[in-house]
Length: 547
Image 1 (cartoon, rainbow, N blue to C red):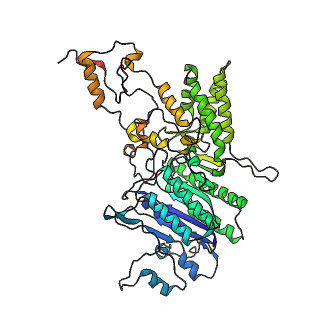
Image 2: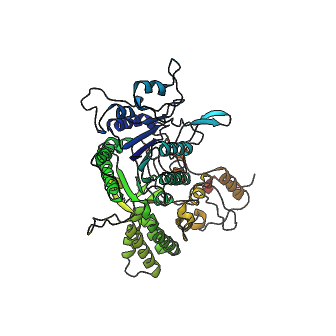
Image 3: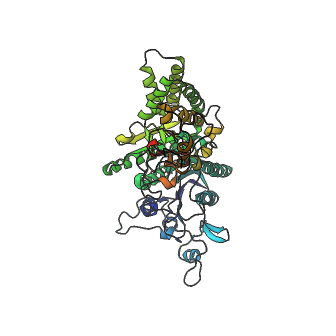
């Protein structure tokens, strides 16, 4: 059993693959420590190119006498590659000999395990498996073949997991993305396997866009101890894996045996490595944010968030409070097409607007108290006092660039208008722990918010007479065939078809979100109990007489 196993799962069967090659080289160049396993899975984008699994620097560990070596190519004019570290599973040389056996003849002690290949028979033909199965198989492989006291997992791929968008998007697989509930199941299962063998699952690094969310943190309870992730956009080169690995190796070389305190200190260092490295993305005009949180403390958000949801639902019954909630929503830090809002900043903005009112109602005061409770839980850890390390949900949270200057680490799903029913976003959201384990849920607030803040149809607002006869029928027909606005409507932002390009190598957002909550049907439905699905047109286009 080693002290540490570091696992890198690169979900790159999309145009991220080319950029990830540089990350593979960085991991290789970091060197090695014989008390650390470094295992990488890389799924390329090119069709029919196999998935690769690497035991990084396995040959160098066997050949070199030293137990610790970093930057071992620093005096060489050559850049080392990972081909010698690839694990082979049944491939043969031109002479018909298994590649692994041929290597074993040249390198004494070489006998690595057979890796998963990420493929199998689906519906009678060979098919690449999607991220749900390949992640599970990769973690099982690492757990059984690379035992360690501590496991750190880094996942790099397309983000946005709340609502099941394109998280870990795989172009050629049987399933193209991974649901949050499935991710939680896989990671809980992995943790149980690790603990059965005397180890611990210490870090989950989600190197993806828009995954540092309350929903994610709460769902991933009882998986890793710590989670490192961003609320906004993340880029392939923003995490300096070479320096991060060197930090781990150097700790091991100094006879470090990781415990809770030393592991937490090291993870804080990794956090700041990422932050300092990412500031150079400002030169290209891209902001960055990052949060390190303690998943053991995530239950502390339950009661305050329930209290906030209840207070907000009650407040929506009053026009003045409703306007204040809308204004705070508009002012607060948002991410990914206005789909997510920083929880702390929303509470801060709402509290500030309410406290500007000289005479506050009980409902307003309830909201202020709830906001204070949420903000208290989401405050960052302070400096240790009297040698005791303060235990908080958010350990570190920082930003680089003014676009994310109001970020505090964790977001909530908070779009301006109800997503289309056919996207099944709310059905998926209702399965999350944040919906099933709360008395008053955030989803209940969202449902009330979308209903209470939606404008009446123009005909109702302007008190126009109801249409009848041919005009009413014509409006009905148009309403039934017209769906909704195009990509600039933020309702579609959690649907992969509506992103500018779900295969975008930067993982960037689509553009032009809507912050309006207009009704999707302008017909006067006061005389009908029907729930319309679509919008229609101005009455200038309606026929004046029946055909």
